Image (tube, rainbow, N blue to C red; front, top):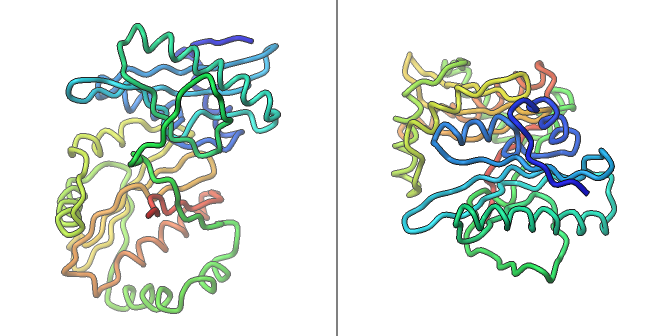
Length: 283
């Protein structure tokens, strides 16, 4: 069994394993680089056996007032072909390795938010957190269906809203770069829905981590040259993730959000993506 740190020169092989084993963009090489822009430490860890990759975990050191902790968002990523016994054995190996790093870094605990079930182990003491950082559940749309099938499977009201937005003159634009109109609309949305957002720098820097595997675009819905909805969309592997959205509530009757989402779906289909992830649907 080999516990090793994966270097910055192994980007392609790191992402290859994540993609082959249905891993999240939060475990992508690019997401680690994104975190480094905020001066956070990142460890990319691989556990192998006889040159066979068993699991990978991207560990991020989060620093908050008075203490710090390790965080593995949507990970670790396991080889989908391993047995339950192997999964438990190598998961314990990962935890022991992370524990050694934690002692040197003086972190208080390790937080895991996996997207697959983790094997039970009596060696380490786990507790269920009262709140998650990432959503535990989401909604998934299969983009391999035809456009007609996708429309037919929508609610009648949603199809009506798409047509209504078009009739009223709502237009969709796609940007490769960040626009500050997003943060203005996000500000209106968070006041209305009472949530806390990241600083604007967080969204700006998302657009600086592009690669062949990981792309970020901004979709805008405009009415009479005024932006009424703005969404940041992440493209990773064969999946499209609707990550962040801000909207103008006063223009809700124009149904720009429905038309924008439909245009993301059509764009993603044309580019060959297979899954649309609505992101963040949870209790």
